[in-house]
Length: 365
Ligand code: TRP
Image (cartoon, rainbow, N blue to C red):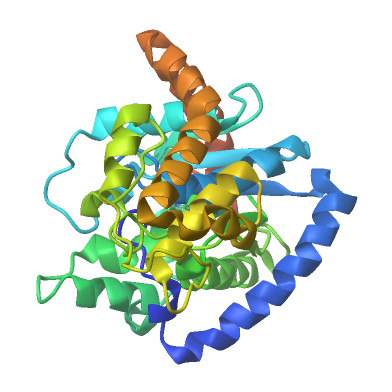
């Protein structure tokens, strides 16, 4: 999930194989994307537990904007029902949802082309979960490695029924739109596998094998995993994240506190010096330079100069995005309007899908 995503290395070994398959497949998909972008419909999304940060930006947002620019249909779910999978309080849900809409638009998602919507506004999507739940076994749900890892992270707290079943809900997110391309990080691969299984089983059981639901592909994002300023995976809940909406001063303050090491000579060595390497990587991503080259230009300037370089790079790179974001949030009606339009589009699609599902299931009265 967005905030609690596990470092990719934490997934059990038996999923390395499915990762390798998906990675190889992603390369083929990239070729097809450049040959025939209009044959794809993308669906992906975020859990609104906070606003988006630099990790999201380089990890997924930039990629979504790239896909949108090829001309393909892009749907983005702000997964509000996923917020309550593992917590009792939704926090400032409305603020987080609108904040994410602002992040999307500021990053370059075009509201006239893309469909941005929330679960809770699309009843037919949620209703699809019922037939879909009938297509999986409880053992399959319990075997899902991401769910297992999340259950372990809950440290003995009881697992909600929604946590156990949210991969099926996520299948409904994807299948209601008949999306065939799902850009995700590695931790989401088990959910994509579940979605593929559900699509196949539905097609076999209710449609004589016809592709009522296309079997979607994961598109693995190539982007590197960014660490936060404390050297652990960037995540809002750890307070180590550079938020897209942060001011230049907040960014400078956060980066000043970033963990480094005592070696004054800056080198790019992700294994021996992960924190320093991560800061170099952030600066490199922001400036389009090579991290080794950046390290060489800082040379013996030490952590202080490294931090100054990263701060400047991040603030420069995000300046236009932040300016657009500030404009967007200054008009309170605008973000809601974008969301209402997206919700209406998603609702129409979901209603049509649910209608054909009901017909195939003989539930027409
Ligand atoms: N679980 C995803 C995450 O935390 C967010 C998400 C919800 C999603 N629905 C989706 C991603 C459908 C891809 C497709 O990152």
